[in-house]
Length: 244
Image (cartoon, rainbow, N blue to C red; front, side, top):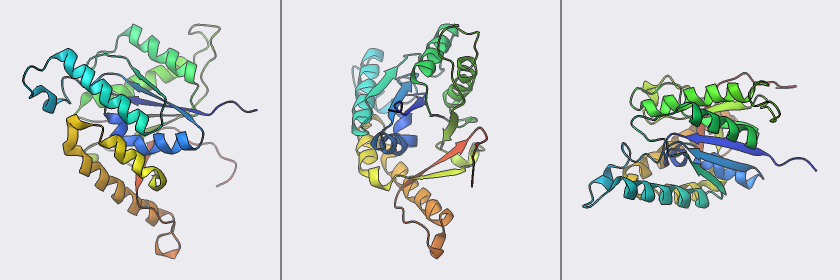
């Protein structure tokens, strides 16, 4: 029997994975993958304005609320493994110990593919900082001399999911994923994010727009596959194939 297929998603803050790759998570869970979601922070300082406006709000209270939202969203996507590193946000603080933890997770999961943020994001340096760290930890996880005896990592693709202000980030998608059959799960996960309700319709509209691109690139009016909702990704590494 073949080994279980796995995937690994890195989310700078507790909500990022929902907006940007919730469909990919739900779809691959449905296809038999075990998807592990790693939230480097809760987004407690910079992405929880609605919570901070409530009287009596505390840092611990915000963290608790954001964790509960993220856990509920992961459940809606059928993801059974979500981990919180609590590294703080604005700014994200990733020291050597935290990097070693991330490397250990990568080696434990042995993902067929990984996902993270765009490589450039001047509006939120936590996002591009996460991807810089993920690339560094991917490299370390491949090193035979790091914790000898552990199973080293192969060469999983790293897909960069779509940033919020796409045109400003130098992000160019080369993959469109049809998520129509799991859209209800993604929308349910989106609605778990009560602290950022202003983004619900934005990411619904984005999924509809990317579906238009999916249809166009799968054949357009000359037989393109129908798609109502899709997500876009940018691959970092070359693909190795036997046929096109």
